[in-house]
Length: 290
Image 1 (cartoon, rainbow, N blue to C red):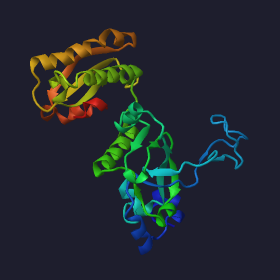
Image 2 (cartoon, helix red, strand yellow; image 1 turned 135 degrees about the vertical axis):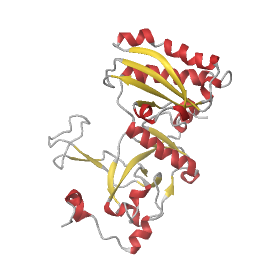
Image 3 (tube, rainbow, N blue to C red; image 1 turned 180 degrees about the vertical axis):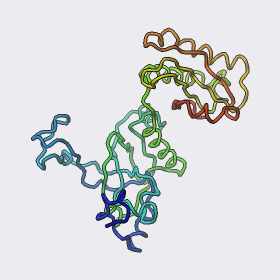
Image 4 (tube, rainbow, N blue to C red; image 1 turned 30 degrees about the vertical axis):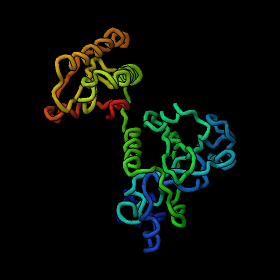
């Protein structure tokens, strides 16, 4: 029995890692690819899963339907994969399936490579010799045993892309629940406006470090919303006015949802108080990357 009751649940499944096991796990990184292990999911103990329509022969455990994907990608953080602390107390890693999209058109492939889609990511490793996409809509726990006897294949061509994959997973997990108007309209239209001006008069956005929201009331039904623009350098009056004009386009539509849009707060990132920053919510704008 472990002395820590908060670790007791998996205590009997956590091994005393041998030196060979530690060595075998050490090369593995978040974003690495392996041949797909057996997958399945839990559901109710009914004869059929009422959501997926799959039969449940094992009383609530549904095996993967049909052929498994060829590959899976490790989504666990690198520090949790190994046999040394803190990974040593974790017997499982999370993986998501990887699918071949060799016949996808160039525009959609570029969209997958640009990190714009929350639940899918293109893999860029030349070792995979084809176009593969990680499907992040589903994640499975698998024993680290699947990693012990095989060598990892990097899922991304560069370390920068592998790190970006980790950031993408973090954004997916951390994205706040907000009113649909803020995510589907405000965020989307700001992102579109940035994309439309990528080659002309870019100062209004190219000097921006990030864009956030300051909300009053419940985040799902806020009474007031303010676009917060954090800049690396001072914007010119015309550049700041571009944000004022853009924000104004949302005012009437926000009222339909019982929300008041106020004038944007434009401030250098070095001048914002930490307390104010913590009160804001980040907006991921894929076209803001420079």
